[in-house]
Image 1: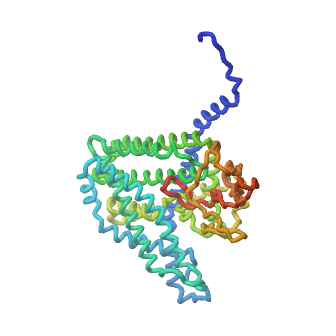
Image 2: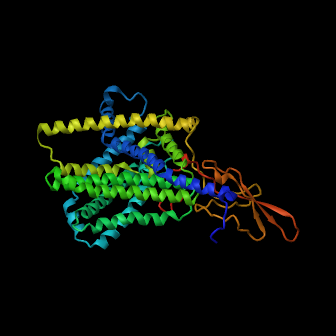
Image 3: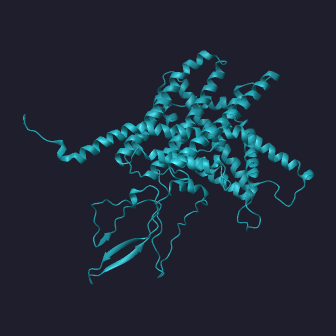
Length: 489
């Protein structure tokens, strides 16, 4: 036992693979943060759009409506579809802001502060789930409103009307903004608690997320969904921390010394969020044998959205494409920030108005600069990924999930939204499944029908039965994230 030798080179392939796994885990933080940084500025661009360019676009559209009797109709539309969507967004923001003015933030704060720590922890978890569900369904409500308002007149009307859709959208944005306000208030209570126990419990909730996701089976498309959800979650947390700092600074009469008191807690929350994301993605890629280079593909897919929204054949606004991809809807978050800033900062006198105007011009400058840098970076990502030819393709059509029949009239298996995984060493009695290598590719859809050979024990003949399997989704076809185990429906 003391002198026995062994040679690792006799199993060179195994140990080389183990070393590569270590190198992959070491590369994950850098590649993940590249994706997170790019996604953060994408969300920031869509968020700043609500404050800067959207009011200007609404004013231009309304000005066009007012000058219509002087200029004449000319046989065209009153407004272009994009202008109609902008006006609807503007009206939604104005109505929801007027409704939010009746919500008392101070009373909500004291109501939440009077609850026990465990109850607040449960409430915060419920709010996170509700926020994801609201985001998933909210974009459908807004899309339905935009399409109902801009649908060509010659098409057969099969909807309930623009006004009911508009009221549904107003109700959704208002309720989502209230939900985010309760989240921010709960976080504010955690910051102001003396023993910091609530803040510690809420931070530990991030580490529970590792247990819920690391030990699941993930494919590259599912990991893309999770990455988009993490980007949205991180950006939303930054805005919530900004709201908490604004409310605390207002309570201390904008004393800059109190800001240094808040910094350690803010840094602790941000550091825990980054650490959880790094650990989670590192072990997911390790357990599922996914290379760190996949995050470059994710960046290229996000960049493709930005570049395609600048094309002449674009069919959506860029902020809407970010909403669909990441589940990030900027309207409720922007509404809450406007409500908090307007109640925290008092504007009195011409000097204050001048400062607000200069601040607005600064926001526009930041938005334009951010858009220019993002567009140049996105073009480089799309070019490196050889995705330029897809820019001029028509938008991907929805794949029907209805059961179909083959030539003989026999109904084929319907598409199941839940993927079924079969172990490689599992053998089915009386059946042999044809193994396909297409699972190793990320964006290769399986167009062909799989052939299942069933051996007839009576005749000894092989019978071929066609069964349709779920086609793999291209990264560009993935629309919005789902909460149920990060599945792709």
